[in-house]
Length: 227
Image 1 (tube, rainbow, N blue to C red):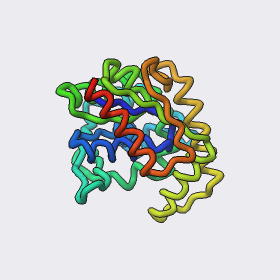
Image 2: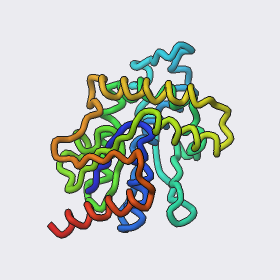
Image 3: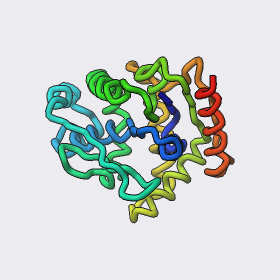
Image 4: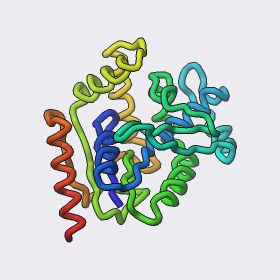
């Protein structure tokens, strides 16, 4: 079991997806699951215009929310997130969801429900999962734990580039503000806050290329397999 945690837009999903592709492991994007729940809450009027979440209503709706993943259509491609059978991969990556996901993810009932699902997915091992609390809460006994970080500005530039490539109309300043806000919420929430597990390897990938990152991660993976 490989657990990759880190800050918003730190590149952990890319790391996890590429490692899974190289090793034949199953990849699970836990962040997409929280985004799907957030989209459901937005579409069902559970989040006000000021960003307040009706936690009680959302907790009651959780049994009605089904999240699945469809495999990528091409090698190394992005898997698609399904919300109650509908492909929502594009929609959950928009700033509308990004601005609301951290408050939703801080709700204890949401975290507990998704943690149970994630643990069931990884019960047999052979999995690479990325998120905010994978190495600390979901898989505390994972054989390999990585904690990824980069400066807020670096992460905002990456996220802004991704969003522009999808045709989203958004400013860099708004993306940076979103990154900083999400960092604060993730670090200070009461339920499973974002932190590095004591036995996790930390990686600052601010100046690394994808090839350098892949090589470093594969080296750590092979060390654990051979141990």
